Image (cartoon, rainbow, N blue to C red; front, side):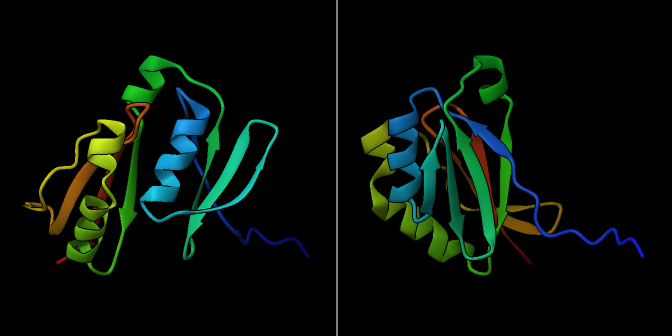
Length: 121
């Protein structure tokens, strides 16, 4: 009997400077679980992604990740306190209540990938 059960889905994020990007993701709280062959596996809780030693400017600047969290204010405080904005010269927005029923903030990674970190309201 066949099954269509799924286990996990992960995106491959581009990295302009692979080492810099790996450090960035560790600094904002992701755990680097493996790093081989130009692909690093990161996770935080049950959420994960793969960082690849590959860069295409158009891809990176149009790539968006969404991280749904339980407490967006704690995440915002953590990201701001991590110092990534100053260390990596990236932008971290303020937390905003969106019309679609979510409070979120954005952070750009060093390659230009946009992260929306949000909480349902």
